[in-house]
Amino acid sequence: MTLGTWLALFVALVVTAEIVRVLRHRAMRHERWRRFFRHRTTTWGLGILTFLVIVALAAPLVAPYDPDKQLDIVHLKNHPPSWTFLLGTDVLSRDVWSRTVYGARVSLGIGALGALVAVALGTLVGAVAGYYQRWIDAVLMRGVDVGLALPRIFILLMAVALWDGLPFAALIIVIGLTSWFGTSRLVRAEVLSLRQRDFVVAARALGAGSGRVIFRHVLPNAAAPIIVSAALGVGNVLLLEASLSFLGIGVKPPEPTWGNMIADNAPSIYTAPWSTLFPGLAISLVVLSLNAVADGVRDALDPRAEAA
Amino acid sequence: MTLVDVRDLVKHYAGERRWFGLGRPQAPVRAVDGVSFTIASGRTLGLVGESGSGKTTVGRTMLRLQEPTSGKMLFDGNDVFALDVTRLRALRRRMQIVFQDPYSSLNPRMTVDDTLREPLEIHGLNGTVTALLDEVGLDAAFAKRYPHELSGGQRQRVGIARALSVEPQFIVCDEPVSALDVSVQAQVLNLLADLQAKRRLTYLFIAHDLAVVRHIADDVAVMYLGKLVERAPAGEIYAQPRHPYTRALLSAVPEPNPHTTKRRIVLPGDIPSPAHPPPGCPFHPRCPHPKKSQRCRTEPPPLRPITPGHDAACHFAEEPM
Ligand SMILES: Nc1ncnc2c1ncn2[C@@H]1O[C@H](COP(=O)(O)OP(=O)(O)OP(=O)(O)O)[C@@H](O)[C@H]1O
Ligand SMILES: [Mg+2]
Image (cartoon, rainbow over all chains, first blue to last red; front, side, top):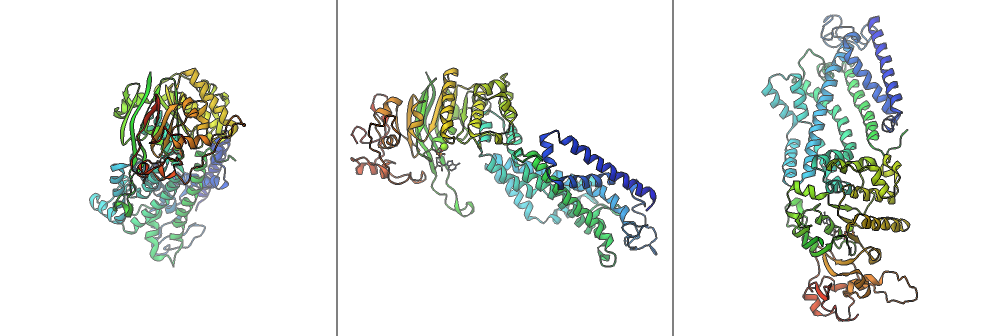
């Protein structure tokens, strides 16, 4: 680690703290955003996610080494963490810290976009099935049953066979398309009960079209489970990406992702635990922070939650 | 002039299928089983009956918030059940509903302002939220509040303002005061009466006892197990009820004059399930009429005129009780 990288890290930390401070300050003026910051854990979660995003964006400044470079395959293989190699090196003598930093770009991108596609699709299908009921519901939900019954790996392998080496966008689509079944069931159940509520009946009586009823009256009241499933979804996508890497069908090596770092170094988990531990910790950190932020978003959207 | 004309309205809820939808369906719930009435423009029909008798279902099906099983509903000459989506939407402006439960009738995520602005937006009307609030006796400051920050009575006023926002001619008031504190009930009833006079509104006023309806209804229809058992001008029904069920309901209404003594009729048993209504007269298992006979158990009595304008569905409606 050079002085420059330490400096860059320090700057990233300061910028994060400043962003969170300004956001908090602004939030205090609005009831809704004051509710967002109600729990201290939400602030921490937001801070950690912001920091990870900044680090990912500033990867060239924060990473001391080229993430793909095998520094010295003979002498620097599985080097334990030290001042030179903050998080050690992996089985191919690559710097784990640099790979973790660059891996954040791909992993955070896939996690966020994959979960977004999955949650959007699941919400849409669940809302349509639950709201319109009858044959639409029957058809969609049988489709979901099939989707849940088919092993996901099987679908993914099929996609890989079709595409022959998945480009980033295709990977996101494939992950998104195979991850929405659970969300759709959850949303459908919620919509089924909400559509009976008097305020939804009132909206229909006033002449609101089904789009307006679904998006203004039904879904906002189903926000809590949707947000929770989105937060958990990101974690699932990160783990899915890891298992795809295990099968050798994820992001192409040597480009690092947290998933393929774990996969590549799994054989040396006893002799050099650091090369799997740190990307694993990064995934856990993201999942925990997202859950904390999800709590905040839920409170922000619910006027009944008491503001801080 | 007749504004609302309901003819032989039927609403059955399909019975559940057991065994994951593969078994034989249970008997359908006959929530509404052939109800007919008319309401003249500017008048109020009180629809009275015990819990589960099908009053809410009548109101919601009339506005086509639920699809009817059969029957007709004419609103100002328009066949409501036959309208396509576009024309139904245009007609929705003219028929509104006020709900029983003020806690579930407002969207918890919307402020009063959002709630009242929405219908104005949908129909491109140029009314204002402040004017609507004023009309139901609420200060303009309430616009910024969320439903959970309001009392039951205040919520109900917002619900009424929402119904008024689209300038309807006809409002279904579905037990609008039964969930409120007694002290607030009278205020909301007075508000509804004032609004009716001011805006020349027509009401279907649903209630579960005859006391509430007394002050507001011009005509009264009594419902039991999905059917009307009596229908008459309000004065008539209070002075001379013809159906034993109406008599029982009326005997439970407190007398304004404490010196008149009145025999209280207590009905045995509970209202039967509308999935399995008794054969013959649906009321016969609980009927206290001294003339009750075998005929009541087998032959359903039709709703027939007893005196001009006063109908009852009882084989012995002419006999004293
Ligand atoms: N969606 C539904 N599915 C099945 N049965 C229903 C449904 N809605 C109502 N019912 C049944 O229809 C019957 C009439 O219900 P309804 O709500 O119209 O009665 P009500 O007279 O308004 O009663 P209350 O005074 O309790 O409001 C009841 O037996 C009820 O259980
Ligand atoms: Mg009811």
